[in-house]
Image (cartoon, rainbow, N blue to C red):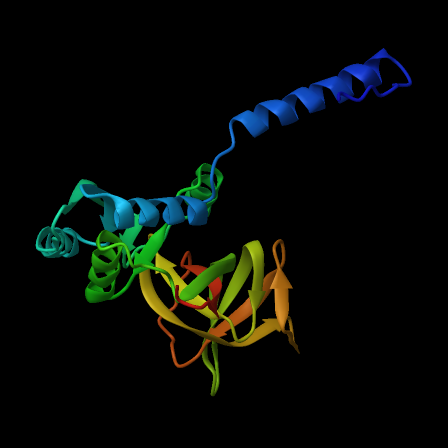
Length: 238
């Protein structure tokens, strides 16, 4: 069943052989995606008589983390338990008012780890409880479109503060959702009301370019803040 391919020379042959060997190796070390891992977890929680849900929780402040710890400890079911294996003030995995940076997000995607973030504690707790009883399915899917660093802030009459920004990843789109992060902590979540390249209004600006970003009814923008641009897609609950 194997196929022989003729190469022009030894160099090309070795290159093709190395690529084929790498493909075989990768197939043997397949890493499930975050969505596949979540599906496996939910199936285990549904069918197992003794199920333990282990969580890594990150929060914006020690007080928030302690409140979440205490609330999670009260969530129980017959034959099921929740263990917080690690908790810290930081920016990834199961987050409250924090966001993963670009590198952490890419590392998580590579390793098939799902990162969930929340700004309201009871929504975080509802999802944890839903996981434990094996009935969680997301009804909204969030996709990060890009990110931009604030390099300068301009005051524009009748528009408020405009963030002179450099797009570091992906794209920035007018009308998209934008989180404003300061030292990794979510300061504001709103819509991009204006997007400009020099004097022109534009719909989208790609990575590697500068632009002016205006957030709907919000002016507390500072140099070195970071915008995380995202969109939300509705999905059917199962």
